[in-house]
Image (cartoon, rainbow, N blue to C red; front, side):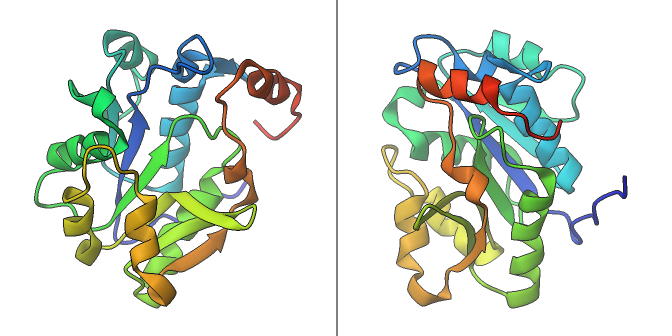
Length: 204
């Protein structure tokens, strides 16, 4: 198998894993698919695409999630204010990256069908077009995973705690670039979704 082209220059990644999976009834980050937890799979996929550094934002669980990614070259940071919303976790991830961060990918740990090539395509498209942000397009919508260029990071840092990334993406209007990632439409939020995932016969 040919290796993926690395992202040049590298972009950082924030993997959001702070939620308490209330709809699922158990921590979705620790669900196992094809021999690994969803969180391990998400971090491994980001690393395979060439993102570095990779920061995992924990919340409702911390020690268990750190254990799940032990051995992977990533940094885990705990967001004690995780219950306030996704914006608080994004800001915690950015704080961990520090001021040296240039482009940053924001992704979740519950979209396990997304492959490394799709994540790499977001950064490659941004580098080719100079767009302020590049989002996944799926099911007649757009959202994360999304790559934010240096000029967009101030907007991410200013998100209200309860906000996700989508309002910021929408604010770019026609300058927002989109990359088709139909697999992003599938996330594991319910027991039925997990059963559907287990029945899926995709590439490992």
